Length: 275
Image: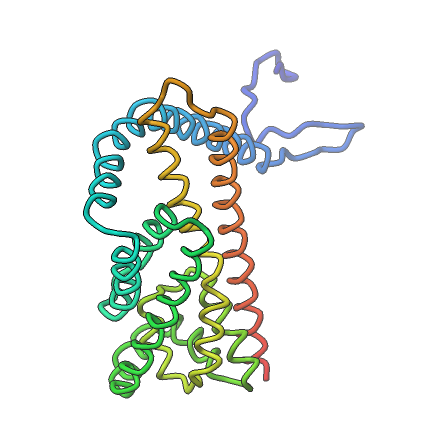
């Protein structure tokens, strides 16, 4: 831009514009907004390319080399009754030794589907949350001194569950189960907060339902993809697209539920602090 002396000045980010004689400073948020848009476009493009690579090459290779042989071995080695007992035992024992039960839930979905699979998983979960509760009660003072004092943020959430009446404890336990709180650790640490067993068990069973349904659906989807990879000549394209779309919706719903429960827990915690 030419100045009054005939020289030229460089227009930079701090250059001000005149509108009807008024000096209007530039808005720095515009540049940040464009940078954010470009960043998300690049991230979305990279994720899309990665998804295409997984679906085109890595997924079929994993199905043919790992999933299909495992399913064949499972069907040849175990009867449905033996597999049900094994899965139930794993869902009881894994939480005791601080291991996740999600792989057993996948297998339940792959083998038994929603009906019997759901009943089997819920029975295993009921025992899997009960044993750590009573085992942890034997080490209550140690848990309170070593865990709750070293992790104050998690401790505040746990103490929230131990306050109030029966329904308040049930509600808090259910929300904590849905939230991204470490599942195996919660089974032991909750005993240090004076939570009664009945609201703890019922709240755990209600709060774990979304995770159980998602795990069962994931197992059923894995089984369907494995069946398609064995007979790719005539794959039910529409059915598979609907299943994959349903899986994506389930992921989105799980994330939204986790965000909502986290906010709800924060509201309950703020309400307790104000009282």
